[in-house]
Length: 219
Image 1 (cartoon, rainbow, N blue to C red):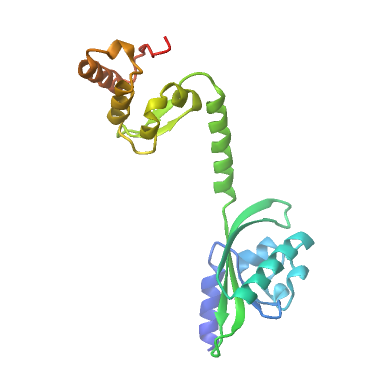
Image 2: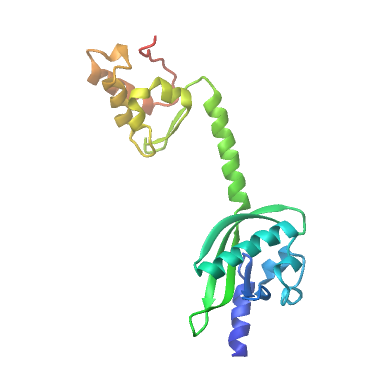
């Protein structure tokens, strides 16, 4: 039994994410090295402590609230939570709490795994800021991938090509978008020679290094 416990502890200690186990009395039964390190303590120092003895007041209150919900409902809980480490850095986690049942089917332990998603969230925030900046400019901005499928268009491009809104969704082929623009009457110069203009425009699009002009219906 002790050999098995040592094996499990070794495995959990080598996980890159904080992992903890609590008894139903709210006291920690086990935390791995990452968890303990984030709190500036050793695993042995945390063992036996309640949440408020390990975490700052605000964080402890939120963590204890999720413990109560799990005890009441008995279901796995998944949620994002921001927690500040002892180094003062605020980190974003995706937390999963789960009940561990005894032989009688009642909850005997609360398990938790908190995956650090700080860098991913920062990346998402940066991307959102860039999107806001691109949407604020009056120029047309649209992106198709290497397979010529739609990726993104800013607000001005969408406004000017409103008849093709259904085609401005991820994965739509450029040719499908262009056909919708022509069929919608957005390109006066294509009138009477739609198929010919379509092929000319597809060829120009394939030669992305060259600039060109297109007259829209608004002149």
